[in-house]
Image (cartoon, rainbow, N blue to C red; front, top):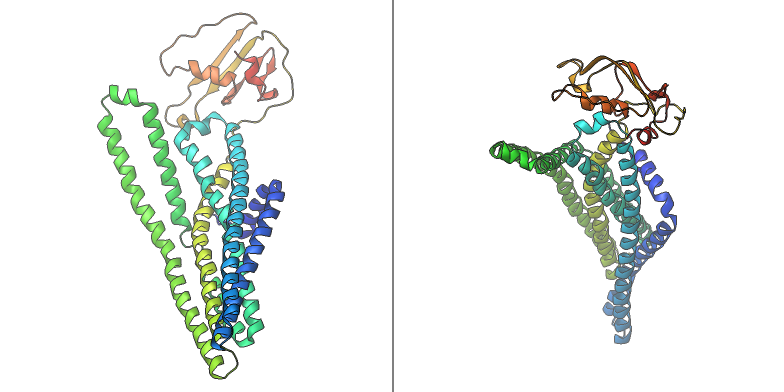
Length: 421
């Protein structure tokens, strides 16, 4: 399976976020303000603790408590605004991606749509992109925001005491390195899950469309059996994907425990040496716990990233599917009724070349302009195939089709349906 690098993620992100520059700036401003307030609030707590231990005035304590509450409320409001802008930008960007995928699929030839059920196509165009929208919105809010918060905490701790800064910095770097190394473990499982999901919706769409035929032919039991088989195959794949993702969950629990132990040990040592106050010890502990939230959020988003990576692989696979038909030339057809000429046309469908041979073989006829030709034949004799070839839904294996003595392969493919009624 082809791997997608972080650079490709970033390129995709930039391409679809570029039109949303104004909203991205508002989001960035709200995010930075939220991070700054989260770094300020622990300092207020330290002042409160040290003032209380030193027997400071109650008025100062009340002021510190009210200031802490006010900053906390403002932080939550700004976080809500950042989340709103992040979701808004993500949905606009992924809606543009949906439009690009739909336009790409409409340009593909009929052989692609013949082998791709409507339900599967819907899941690939909308389901995979929906997973990607969660990645776009949450990645910017949680990954980038929490990385900035984590960096800010380390800088503040270095300002308090270089030993505390070094200890927590090593802890944070170890945690991030471990999460990055484990990031891609579940990607193959989520890719399989997305494919089975697409197969399931494709199956349901087909059966709903053919409900009358299913009932008329007494195939209800057969359809239900296939339905249960797909569900039975879907469940273990989902369990495998979730189990692989829990490796990250177990890792972060161990990392949190290690971080708390480091913070308490460093704080106890510095306090025993009379290098810091008890308020500063609590500050170290608070900042370490504050680090646990961004690391947990980063862990959650790495799980989303695994699903997004699987979706991006599937989206890129879809975008790499090329139409077997050329776009045609630039020769324009005259207006009005046109003559139709088939010269030695031989044709077989892509899935029938080996098994059933040619559907049409050496077919030649000329239909003058304004005349009508009726075609009679049994089912499968090639009547519909002639119409499909005339519209260039397929190209013949050999021979030439002309409209008013102009080969249809030399006319623009997009213009051809307008001349065929």
